Image (cartoon, rainbow, N blue to C red; front, side):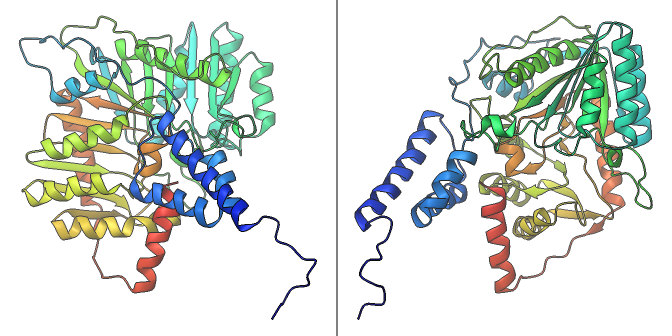
Length: 466
């Protein structure tokens, strides 16, 4: 029995359709191998199934969003580190050397800002003090009072002869008024958009975003951390308090290294270079300052740097791991490492917002939270929006910066964390994180329904792995 008229034909025969699917799978395999991309199994499975079952949708989506790494050589190993101050290098510094991270340096001062208004005042004061150059990189530049205050200070700086550069992520700053950008440019501020969406469609890099937060002043001071340049990160909004976040200022050689990192991102954004393969400088520092290190990570690195360091830290921790993040969607390897740490007696405390600004992230995190709690971890839910990111391991290392504990930050975004190895910084960050935990409520583990478990799995695979 024929249900269709004889003159109706499918666009492609079965053989042609099969060839199209095979071509899509070959594109996936070839591009993954050429760029040496390691994907989480669920992400790889999602792409393969989408290409195989829905090729006319899956192949264009992969060509637009599927690139995870910019093709480049593997990181070159450098010569072994020499001992400093009669002590062997920290294991994380040794691993960072193998991952081609900027060298750890001692610096003059570091100050942390947990209060948003204080952080904003510090940032604006730094801009006012600039005499030669200001370099700013942010994921979001708001359309609000903070952006207006920042614009005012940047235009004043440019008018007194300071070279000012502003690097914005194209997608992250989509709501930034173009009138504000025009005002900045008219007053002499150079503005670049990182990975413009339309320009990068044909290169498949639409999904690669610059999430770094960095302000470098005269190559001497650097402001960094987790805050974007928008009001919710600094000041109260109507009836809503400012998001709880953290930033810091370092004075010393780290600022010169930050300038090098910024310059490389600026060149990528301007199209001067397609990827970075140039070591960051190692300027001399004070003999007795705090030892710190930049941890850049992203598609421009051969390795998934932050992920590798988190894995190593989970297996090396002896007493305590404290994690602070707004979003928590780790891959299976990292989740297993933290669960094993709990089972061998390491006290793991995770602090998250009870409800974040991304509802899908809250859904996707649930299976990982249940696994951690089953292993003995303490999961604490902060009563309001918490945007800070920090990792503290025992009493000898702490990180904070832009990277969340989710697949996008660990495998897709350009991120920038800072490692602190000095006792004063580690103590401050530890006390701050434990204070957040004390202000939080313990999470309760409840078995999900079958429908809820299916929803969590779909959101995790589709929303956070591709």
